Amino acid sequence: MKRIGVLTRDCAGVNACIRAVVRTAACYNIEVVGVFKGYEGLMNGEIKIIDRRSVSGIINLGGTFLKSARSKKFLTEAGQIEAVKNIKNNGIDGLVVVGGNGSLTGAHILASKYSIPLIGIPATIDNDINGVDLAIGVDTAVNVALDALDKIRDTAISLERIFVVEVMGRDCGYIALRVALAGGCEEVLIPEKEFDIKKMCEEITRGNTKGKVSWIIIVAEGKARACDIAEKITQITNLETREVVLGHIQRGGRPTAIDRILAARLGNFAVELLKKQESGKCVTLKDDKLVAFPLEEAIKPKDIEVENYYKLIKILT
Ligand code: F6P
Image (tube, rainbow, N blue to C red; front, side):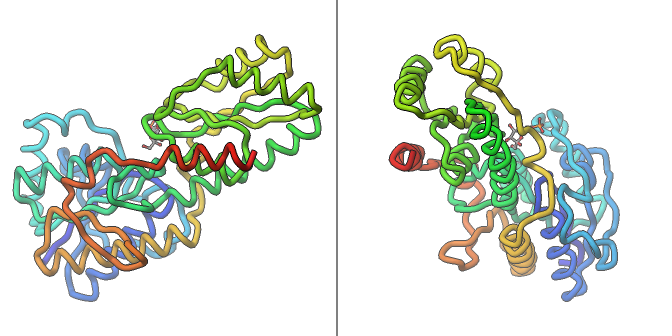
């Protein structure tokens, strides 16, 4: 193993992970090249050497200094062949792919179909990687959303209002469930669960008659738009309702200690595995121990324990 490539998606903690990859590799005199703009950059040959110095001062920064992009072309065979050609032409002996479902699916293709030595590191605020309790970026995203929510609660209480807060999660309600539980919210609407807006409004009206004056309802973006839910609540209950969309602020920001530590450990482990000629694996922590399991498993759908979260949120409301 003389040269490792690293390719990333963006979320808080990814920079800390790149730093861990580069500095671990440096200890073994393995050179690291950064693949800029994800799979798009891999196909276009946007590949540059990065050294210990290139990754100084980034441990506390959100995003990814390697930049990222969503790529449709990489889903095609022609795109994949381009990517493999660039891996070979750039003398890359092993690849570390840091990202979510899409990135790890791409990683699985490169490892299984084209025999590229490769380790995947889960990094996605959605926390929807199967077999992974906590992906890089999740802790920061939930804390960013929670911080915003606490501020919204100040106004909700002061002005006796209902707030509908939209959090990220196109296909997955994980952030919504965590934020609703940590924020003491009354209701949470997620893609994985049916909901009945009339029933919810009846509960609100009943509570209001008994003197309850403010509510915070979390909605995952993949389930519905906050503005539509807020409008319906006002129509049905006649109570003042506002919507807030938190959006991409959840994906950025200064990574928490949990994310930085996770990133450091997984980045280091990925290089150790490549050195041992392991490939096609996803790394994670189980009982605080580093483990690796097949990427094929990681990209299967994940059960996020919806009912357990949901029940608890309701009990504690
Ligand atoms: O997968 C992470 C995520 O932030 C989802 O929560 C969200 O639905 C999606 O990415 C947004 O993607 P984009 O930034 O490409 O609009």
